[in-house]
Every structure is written in structure tokens, then in C-alpha cells.
Image (cartoon, rainbow, N blue to C red):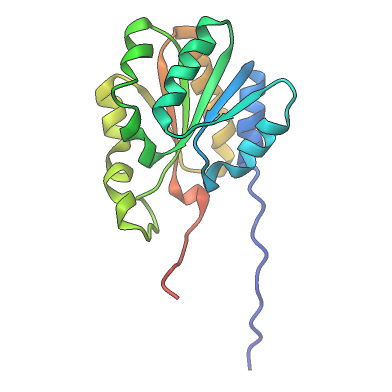
Length: 180
């Protein structure tokens, strides 16, 4: 008879690496729509006395908030899930046409191991939609590269006054099996 041994989940280090990349990039304001994929990062940002973290009702509010933050002298980042990309399309015209930097960190859904069919349309099209809007898209698929990619994306956004989205592959978040 075999013994059923539960394995402890491997700790996710990349949320802390994203937080450090934001700190190194002098990000002061965090706009976010609550998301389980960003929960550790959001907690770190809320606990940091040098950052202001604001929970939004919808993602496009974050684009407006961070445009205002930039005009007021602060750098910011928008944390969201890929399903929220569609909510931002019209509002992205503000930073794109005004040449304001915007850094978005997007946890992907509708990819590897997705169980929710409602996540498929934006999950499969978020990258293309963002690129079609003129957003510079960078993707992180492996945990060891996440911090560097977010830092590089922040440097691109803030030094070139452009809109950058860093997409975090669903593989980083893990497989959810809801079949049982």
C-alpha cells in the first residue's frame, strides 16, 4: 500500500521580486483591482509606508489615477488580471496620446490550465489587444525572470514616457483543478 503524501506548495518568490523592482524604480502609487494572483504583492505594497495602494472598482480608474499621479510627480503601477485589459482600452488613449508613462503588471488567465471559460476571450487576446493599442508588451513565463522583466518594463515606461504591460503567464500562478 502506498502512502498518500501531500506536498507543501513551493513558496512563490516572484511577488517579492516584483515588489523590489517597483521599489528600485521609485514607484510610489499602486492602483489595483483585487486579484488572487497579486495578493502577496498587494499586501507588500499596502504595508510599505512609502507607497500608497488604492483598491479600484474597475481597471480604467487606475489608468486615470496613475496619469494624475505622474502629473503630480509620482510614479505608479497598475496591477490587474488579463480580464481587466478590455476595460482599459478606451482610457489608454490618455497616457498614449499625452506621452505619460504607465506600467501595468497583468496576471494572465485563459491560458494553461484555465477552468473558467469566461476567462478565455481576454486571456487569449490581451497581448494582441495591448499591442494593437500601441502598448509595449513584455511577458514573463518563468519565476526566475519575473523581477528582471518588471524592472526592465518600469525603466522603459518611466525613461521613455510610454505605456508598458508586463504579462505574467498563468503558469506562474499554478494550475487550478476544479473538476473534483
